[in-house]
Length: 196
Image (cartoon, one colour):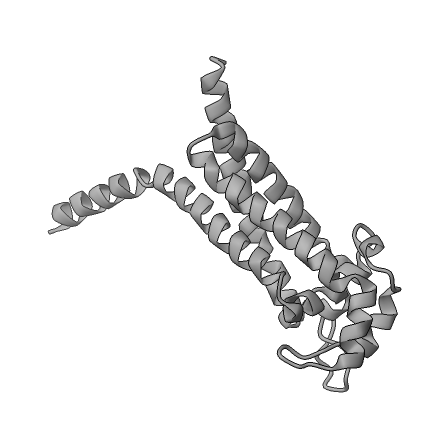
């Protein structure tokens, strides 16, 4: 019995070890799905309005908006809500224009990363951009106050207590890891192509 279990375990290990290539391809598919979906959502107003706290507080991105960071708090909208005054503020802030441009970039990165299955050079560029983008997204943990539970009297606030926005951002650590795996795989493919 013990020998049978040992044999089954070794078989399981062999099958698992053979899944690495499939796993790398599935990382590319996952990045494609996530980036094309999220990038596509950037064309919807509710999504554009939802990223304002991240962009407005970022020293690397706030210049895309015309209004200063604290002002957006007066013009926040719930998902699905419409208010003409707040909509006009967002239109003047370049909220919608920036979001659409970002959406195009995100979708392009996802597609290029996926194309790494067929072209290591395109995939290398896509995965490299995915690494840069996810590092930028993770920087919101430092720059955006809304990622941490605020002090509203419960005694539960601040680090390490993430809000919904913070929980959304921290998941990019997995995307970053996957993008690095795809980047390395594409680099190996390029090296094979050039005979190095």
